Image 1 (cartoon, rainbow, N blue to C red):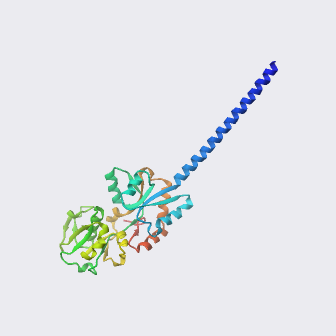
Image 2: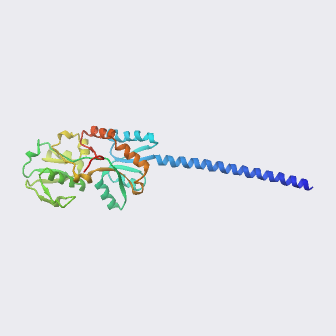
Image 3: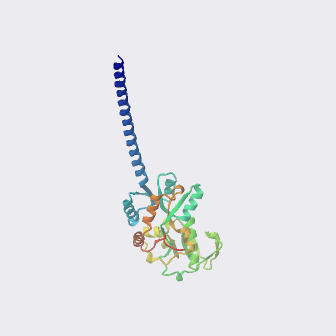
Length: 289
């Protein structure tokens, strides 16, 4: 009886042990599967990066960057927008990982207005404003009382005034880093500055003596950089107008994003930018101001 009990006990004990090992094996298998799935998801989400741009990927610049970071396991997806606010809203809300749409000055102003902390993580290009005309062959032909069309947005208005001052047509208050129309201190030719929406300025060329147009809009209007009567110089005062790649502040040192910045800031991309824009857009990451 005792041996039978012992056998039964051992037999039951063996059965119990088998069950325990069986469930332990299942548990370990589940943990392994979950762990692999989790890592896969983390790796996938960490390596897929959405970059916002405004307009189309002109000349395939970002397509080239995407191909170059592919070897690092980064799947760069380009998301196109039609205005400059949406890419920042999308970045703020986490629908984008980075964007490359704006000048540093615009980003700073946008952050201040919307109480956000979007931050530059790398310079891209600078696009000096240029002067075009259907009526004049040079600035020397400008007469008293002439009309000049300038962009009505605050950023390009300031840049336009700096350009006109640089060209010797007006003077602005030197104490103002970002001058406005009220900061004009001298206008000997009594030039009439006509503010217009930037995209409407090319159409206004027949009605004005001069027009100041940014490179993107000039390109869309089929205006050749070689047709410009004058182009703004790139100086220390140009720093706010350098375009940048931006991320959320917490991602400033993100290694994946920094690899994308590095892939953008190459000689190959610099040559492509110059070729596509016929010299009207300048790679800005190596400029010393």
